[in-house]
Length: 259
Image (tube, rainbow, N blue to C red):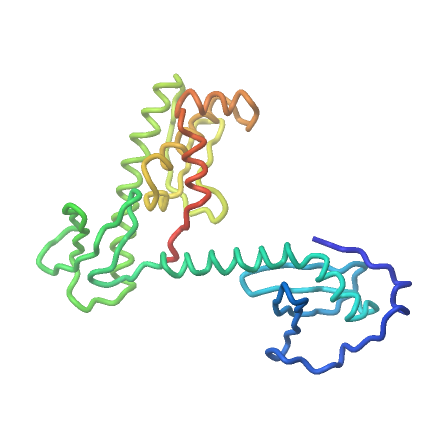
């Protein structure tokens, strides 16, 4: 977001940018009695005051001619929004920490909306799933990286088999042809489809429920008929998977476990 401040306002306030800070070095404090947060102030060659709330906190970029009081006034105006963003970021960081996978014997791997307990067993030759346990052919005390790599290879094999089956199911319903199903590790999207019939799906969708996976697969298969996100496209998604709205909401609320 960006808030324009007029240069003529400079004369209205004294500039005390050199005032000592009571918070951590490099940070300043905003506190109006109802809202309180620290922020990092960066002076820059720009025409407006910019505010960004990220995982590393609140950053304010301001023109060199803007006084600290003017900056505080803008922060007061936007304090409700900033506080909501700070609290949401903190909540998400707590959830990410809670979702982090412990790559050890007894750790838990989110799988199809449930959890598999990781068990190390040097006496087996291949990865095996037994009820709610995932047995890995590794010795006790094995380093976390090897455990993660074995679990990842297993999940990718499972993902390919499941995705191919679900793509075939929805393609049959729609009367289209899926020419190839590829696994993806894209940072910004769960799936994609090309006009030639290739569908790519993020293998880590296997962390989520079957309904979420079906929504993403149906979404991409629908693109083989409608290469857009217009009303006809969403109507097609609804024909393939009537519960798509609920599944989409679930996906948006879901936290992808840090690896």
